[in-house]
Length: 187
Image (cartoon, rainbow, N blue to C red; front, side, top):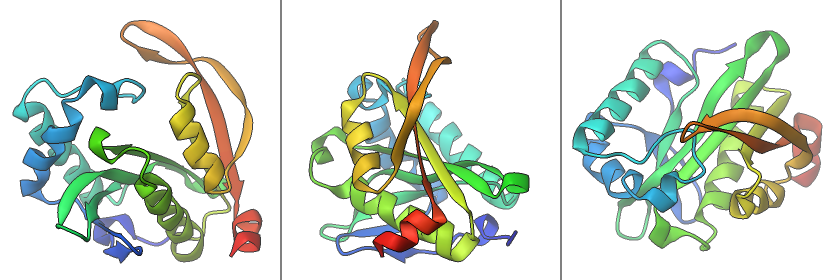
């Protein structure tokens, strides 16, 4: 596999710029990551203070240095505003597959930004990295994320029971995936 994450490129869509996280991004990340509604279905808790966001940025920067799967920040071309993250959260090189995830500012929900960003991440994963399978999960109650994954060509594969712990409680998640051959067929 290529050492793509240590020099993650900037990629663009019609309305978005996806670029590597930078040290100074913590303030913009805090703006959306502190919102309990944004964090409700994520694997992380809402950021309580700016230090939580700084730690998050340091974590991603460390992953870049270690060439581990990582997110881009999502920036609106119109206004140059950082509105979220999207990208890779894990990979299983021996099986040529990866997992993607995303989070976006609440005031940007239902505008198609996540779908646009996720499609670009999937394209990058298949065409640049060469994955065979890309998967994602969402809480069973998170219908918005499920719709995004379906719009991007990901297929529902089932429910993983008590797969994650959120607020001290086990949560079921829906599992989605798309194969390289399926993604190519949509091109």
